[in-house]
Length: 385
Ligand code: PLP
Image (cartoon, rainbow, N blue to C red; front, side):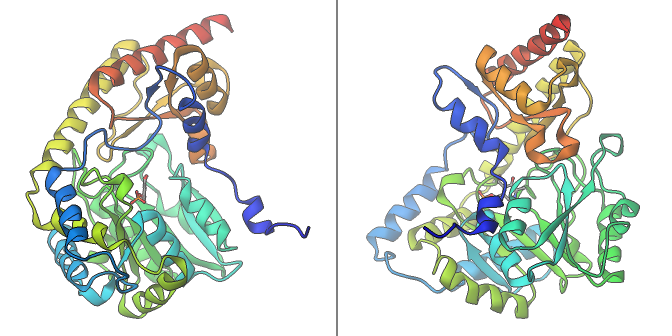
């Protein structure tokens, strides 16, 4: 047989999924490795999908999404993110994951370079490689609160650089970039004529500070990636959207046809209900994540493993370098010995190596028990060295 595609074969797998696949085969594991709200999808959203299917929303829809949903999304971005958007600039996607892939497909030719954060959500690197483009990592240092420094990014720009990806609030760090940083990033993109992809799937999960969209300053060159997964506890529904200038949105719409044809029609109706229904669930979930964040920070301080406080999203990175093994090995050992699953920092890049990522989207009692076991395990590993 002829060989399989080299690009796909060589694409790295997700280091988070490795732990997930092991954790699900073991009994009584405290699962802190996945970024998934532990809340159920609000009942009125589920009901809307059911009603939609009953009312005939069971057919193919337009590739860019139902017009009624795109209108609501344009209104939502204008209201929440603060920059004016028309329905023509919105493409509904299968979660933020596929929206990002479609946007990258519309932007990148083989060999183009894309600046991505280190540490970062692993899907950027995977999607860029799949598009035969080149990921180039810019560092996010804990000493700077995981906020990028312009000089670190600027030094990496070449003639082939086409795009910078930013993610605030961030997975895995929980950093929320200050307005000055966003302004400086836009300025950098303008000076070097680069596109700016802003992954804003955690835009409504900010505990301190404010969420600032770069599109406020330059909507023409910004591509916004958004999702329902985290905001409305809708991870399994697979619905998100991409906002871009009209020319780029037209290409994304064309790409949606061979990629997905369209997003499931009842799911789009559920998304409409999420936007038009009561919004209290967002605040309630955010308040829970904040409370858990505070409890974990307090516990880490007590255990002497505290290093920083995340300001948004629902993750915290914990420094496990005292254990004396790389973070992947640490995560495997912790799972085997203590039945606690965490995401190894190596899954997010080289600078993640001292850390493991804990998801705060877990029930508080389990979360604290998991963190307690983790601290104890670092201590005992250190004592054995
Ligand atoms: N962007 C970031 C930073 C994420 O953490 C995730 C999910 O974990 C996504 C995008 C995509 O989410 P979804 O495809 O579920 O909408």
